[in-house]
Length: 293
Image (cartoon, one colour):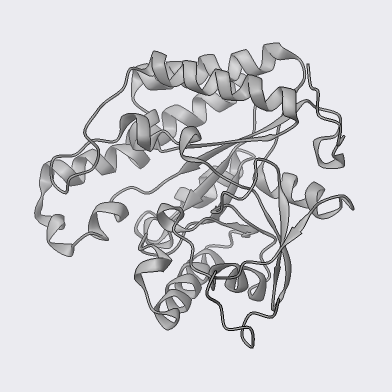
C-alpha cells in the first residue's frame, strides 16, 4: 500500500510500525492538580481503576493477540504499587519513564524538573527495572527535557510532535531518538472526563475512536510512518473501549504489512538508520550562546 519513497531502514520493510503505549498514570494526574484531591474518594477510585482493573485487562488482551507494548509509568505509581512495573516486564513488555509526579516539565523550574526526573529513575533502579525511554507528563516537555534524557543515558523520548516518523534529537549530552506523538492518537481526547478537577467535556463512542485510529493507520501505511498510540488503562481499560482496542489491533494484524514493536526496539532500529534526520530543540527566542545555531 505504501507510496513512501524513503524506504526507512527502521521499518524493516513494513508499511508502518505500530507502538502500542499505555500511560499507567493512576492517581498522579489528579494529585498533580492539587494534593487536596486525595480526599475525593470517587475521583481516586476512578483513577485507581487503571492499575487495578484496566491494566490486567489490557495485559490479557495483549497476551491474546501476541503483540508487544510499552508502558510509561510515573515513578510515584511504581513506588506505591511495588511489583507493578516488574510484572509488566515479566510479560515481555517494556516499562519506560513517565516522570515521578506527573507534573509537566513546563510547570517546573529546571531544578525541579531535574529532581523529579531523577527521583523516578531512582525508583526504577531500586526495583531492578531497566529504563530506556521517557515521556513527559501531558507531553509538555521543556527545552531542557531532551538534555536530561540524554544525560542520564536513556535512548529515546516520546513527547514531541515534530514528525510522524522517528527522528534524532541533538542535545548537549549526545543524540537521542524521538518517537513522536500526536493528540489524534491519544485516548485522553476521546474518553477522559471528570467534573472535578475538570477534565474533558465529552465521552466519545469507542466506535468513533476506532474509526479515527483506523483512518490514521491507513494513512500511515501509505506514507511509511510510526503509529504511536497512547492509551490509559483507566480509560481504554473499560470494557467497550478495550473491545475497540482489540478490533484496532486485529485490523492492523490483518493488514499484513504492519509491524508491532516496543518503543525501545524502534528507537534502537532508528538510531542505527543512517538516513534518520536530526533536529536540535531550540526555543524561537533562544540565546545563541546557550543554543548555538
